[in-house]
Image 1: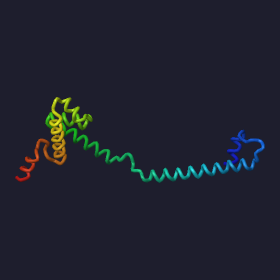
Image 2: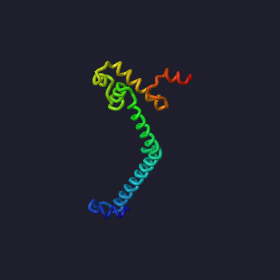
Image 3: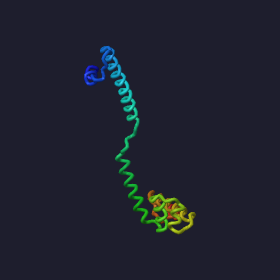
Image 4: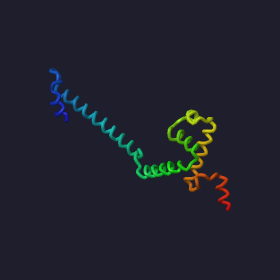
Length: 142
């Protein structure tokens, strides 16, 4: 490697410099570069071994199924609740902006979003979307 680099960079050799010293400095530079690159590669390999994969096929597929189920259940929500939840959860509106868009007070919008989330949660657990907690308790008691 030292001879290759010396031949490739022969124009950098200055007359009057001892050739052996020049070759030694090239060899020293190559050795330092090798140690640095080895340490870097070792660090990168260690870091990569500790990283979890960016793509998890099973989790991605289950997430898509879950999202499809949620979107399907949203069609069964009350129209006002669905509109409120869509603006806040899907479109990223702030509660204030969503309330202004729908022309309702912010507290009303927050209640609609909360009720919609609870209804979706119950539906995903197997209850009907229209059920209230009281109706669910009555059905269980029967």
